[in-house]
Structure formats: structure tokens, C-alpha cells
Amino acid sequence: MIQAIPRVVTNTFAGAVDNWYYPIFSGWGITSEFTVQASKIVMPIEGIFRNLATSCVVPGHPNYSITLVVNGVDTSLVATVGTGQDIGYDSIHQVTVSIGDEVAYKQSGAHVGATGIATCNYIEFEGDACFYGMNPSGASHSVGDAGVKMAGALGNGVWMSGGGITRSNTFSLCAINGTITRIQAKDYTGSVLGTDSWTVRLRKNGVTQDGTGGTVDTSCVITGSETTGFSVFELPVVLGDILDYALFRGGTTQPFVLASVACSLRLDPTTSGEYMMCGGDNDALNVPDWKWNDNEQGPANEQQASALVGVSGFQARGLAIYLSGGIVDSALPAIPTQFIFRKNFVDTAIQLTIPAGTRLASMFTNVDLVNGDYVNIKFLDGEKAHWGLAAKNITSAPSVGTGGGLFWINPNNTHDTYYDMIRKIPDPTIKTALIGE
Amino acid sequence: MPKGAALSEISSGENISHFAAIRIRLSGIGNLNMSVYSLDNMRSKTLVPFVMATNTRIIPTRLVNFMEQRAAFELKTTEMDEYFRINRIVIFTKEVFSSYPGS
Image (cartoon, rainbow over all chains, first blue to last red):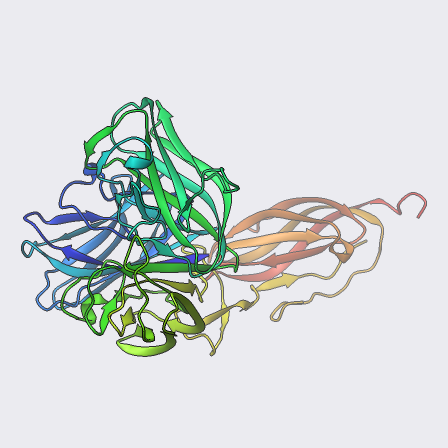
């Protein structure tokens, strides 16, 4: 399956240096070398990254490039925005990754000041399932439940201290049904754990999945001389489930570090090829406002809050909304609230009106996105919410370097795959009759 | 038979033959992939491909080593921008047995 990963990232080009590293999912960057490790996501699944794209719509932005970095090394997957351009693509190169590999974006370009400006990136991942990851937590970690760190588990999380709470303020809302089958984690502290430990678990709907009380044991433990760990299990998730990572420290307190533990998960969708994009906002909102994962806060600017769709596009299949102010449920609004999935700054058919007194709602219809589209979630009424967008790839990824063959044109195909993979023109062939004496 | 394929004249006889080799007067670009099939395609064997050249003085021979009553040879290219031109096919066979035991 192919998973599209579009994201917005704020505050790029900020600071005084000209390279920024940031995660391919959520979280912000760091203007320093990759070895600082704050931006890495550790892969829980093998697969191929391809079709990198980047866009900046802020007037006067500098020329820049986005590079996929794997295990600290720049890959050939580079998208460049040159003079007079707002969008750059790399549809040629692809990068194969294995379980345990570390990936991040590197953005290179002249810095523009203290706060920087927003860019949006898009990349595709082809694997047996979809995946979501968190870059390392940067904090001190006290032992046990009191020191737990939490973050949304499906691509929109930001680490926070979770002592005494059961849900993070960046929790992820499931928009599809599936089974989470693996957690992968890596310790970046550089210290030998010995009798200390790190344990990553999932919290589903506020309940830690540790094997007790009938829950699925998702515990991924790193201890002793280890620096990596993984766990395999089957944790079913359905539309409307709330998911967080919960990172526990065992043994002795971990003093403050820039990067402690990164973790990621593999999700096998129930419907083949499905995946989701998640986000949310707990800040004060304008009326209306436009949101995507990690877009800028502040004055409404739909263009700068929108994510770019790249080469293969995807099909948005529906939207789920959970009205909430964060770690605890806020009071429900007394009037209906509206959310719209927008494409190129125009409303699509994915429009959700949540009745007064209702917290969780969803609607499903298909909207096709193609290369160059911009997307966002419009919050019409200023209500804080977390969202999950169900998605599915709708084109077959071309195989690079196979030679392929000749295919009949299918006029019904509307994306880059104009040919029909099912109707291959036969290879030039001679077959003799049966010869015998 | 796929569209664009060529059909040769049939031959007679069902004695069990050893198909020893195939020789082809051949020119083209790419690899000519070859396979040999028994009746009803129940047995097959993939042969080492010929690497083609647009100009050549060599008429290459490829060992087959396939024993059946009747055999059909399939020749094809599979990659973009490959083509072949065949002027002559010679198949070297030797009758080995007249029939299978009891049949």
C-alpha cells in the first residue's frame, strides 16, 4: 500500500543557521546537525519512500531544498524550490528503508529571522502497512506513572508530561479500522541503561495497553545494554478510538536530555490500502480557521495552513471529529459545529455538522486529490477539536527501472497512471507449433 | 496465441525425441528469451537467452536438452525498446524412443 504523508511545518528558516531538521510527521525542527537526534523517526516497517514534494507560499521566501535523511546520511530524494518557484518535486528517486532505520527531513535554505515561515512537505511511503512515528522526547523523565510522557500516536503528536492524566493534548483520533501490530523504539540518551529501562506502550481511549485488565500488552521495553526495542501484538482500533504513546521510565530518573526515546507503530488497515491523517487544535481559534498538522497559529491565513498533495495524490474518504479542549473533555457547545475538508481553498463534499451536545461524529464520502492540490480542515465555529481524515491511495505506484512494458491507455484514469496495468500489450512473441518426429 | 505472434507449419510424428539444441539466425536489440513447452504446456523449460546484436556473423546455438514427444518453442522479448528479427530456426532433435512403456 501507499501512504501519503502531507504536513505543514511552521517556523522553518528560523534562527541563524541554514539547515533545519524536523520529523516527517509532526513536531518542529531544530537548527542543528542530525546528530542532535531530535528529529529522527525510527522505522517500524520496511518500505520505500518516493515522490517528495515541498511548497512555500509565503511571498519572498528563500530558495530551498528538502532532503530525506536516512541514518544521518542525505539521500538522493531531494526536492528543490528555485528562484521564482513555489513548489519543488523529486519524482525520480526513491529510497528503501529497513526496520530500525532513522528518517528525518533536512531543509536547507537561507534563514529569514527569529520566527521563520511555514513550508509544507509531502512524501509517499510504500510498504505492507502504514506507519506513524514520534521523534525523540526531549525532557527529563522521572520514574513510573508520575513521569510518563505522552503524545498522539498517529502522526500528530507532540510530547508532553503525562503524570496524572490519561490522554495527551495532542491525542490522535482514529478515522479508520485496523490493527496495530508493532511498536519500534530507540534510546538516544547515549547512556547504558543497565537496570534502568524505557517502556513504550499505547493508551487507547485513556487505558494503558499493558496486558492487565484484559488489555493487549503493547509494551516495548529497552533495558540493559540495549538501545533499541520492539514489541509485536495485535491491538484492534476502530473509528473514533483515541490513541497516545505513553513513554515510561523505570529504575532511576533520567535527567534532562535533548533526545530520549523515539517510537513508532505499524498499523495494518482492515480495508486494504486505507490509512489516516490526524491532527487537532487545543488553542484559541479564529472564526473561521483552517488547520492542518502543525500549521501556524495566529491570524487566519488559509494558504499557509494548507498542506500540499504530491505526485500520486490520494483519496480522502471521510472525516472524524472529536470536540475537545485537550487532556480532558471541555463543555460541549450548545449549537451545532461545522468542519469542512477543503481542497484548493474550496469546500469539498466532506462536510461534517456536529449536533449540539455531541462530541464525536464522522461522515464518509470520497474526494480525490491530485498532484498540486492544497488541503486543510476548516473549523467554522471556533470550537477546539481533534480530527482524523480517512484516506486511501488511488493509483498504482510505478516501478522504477523495471522496463515495464507497453500498456493500453485507459481514458478513465485521471492521474499520472494513464496506462492500464491490467491490459498490458503482449510482449512480441513467436511460438512454434508442436514439433516432433 | 497472443496478438502479433507468428505460427509455423506443423510437423508430424509423436516419437519421443530428445530436443538437443536450437539455432537461430537472429538480429535485434536486447535479449531474446526462449522457452520450450511440451504438449498442453505440462512441462516447460526456460533456456538461456540470446543476447542480440543488430549486425552479426554468428548464428548462435543454444542447448535445449528436452525430451518429449512434441515440443513447442517460444521466443520473445519483454523489455521496452527491444526487438528481434528471425530469418531461420533450426532445431536439432534425435528420436530416442517410439513410445512410453505400456502406452
